[in-house]
Picture 1 (cartoon, rainbow, N blue to C red):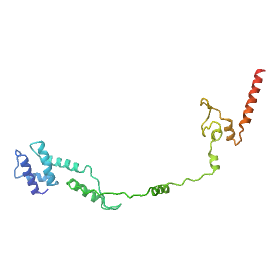
Picture 2 (cartoon, one colour):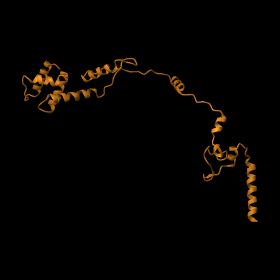
Picture 3 (tube, rainbow, N blue to C red):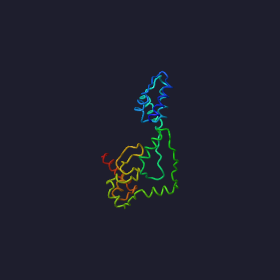
Picture 4 (cartoon, one colour):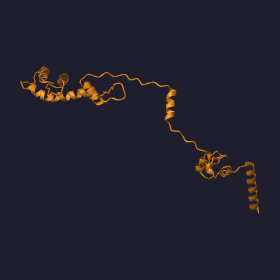
Length: 210
């Protein structure tokens, strides 16, 4: 705002506030305070202040201009030119912010993302993933947990690392014979094992009776 525009602003404020006093030095004083602002913004701010009160001070005009410019730029989005890099980014950003604050909103550039087939997206994702090294069975056996908990139970299907359970009530129990045999690499014959248990039980009954 130059000195002539400051004088025009004073005449405008005097028209808004007839009871406010002005003299020949008022335009120079207001120019010293409002020289960094545009006349259009100062007029808009003076009218807003005059709607609320009968007198308008230059400091109140400056404060109102700050509110007006803040409202104009609260949803500002920088619109870069075509291309991924811009060496004049900061200068262009400041220019667009200043233009938006002055009431000249830059046009919003329509952006359209390149479309890619789903197959191409899946292929690019698969290519970016690291390859999983293949392990031979001996490597798996070497890190496997020792003992019966290192294999799945063939009887109750308890997972590796989980204890065997009784099917009736689900309580934990000692590892099944088939799991013990599998852990030690032995074949398990359920019929032979059942016959052995019966013989042991009969022997125990005879000893108890005697």
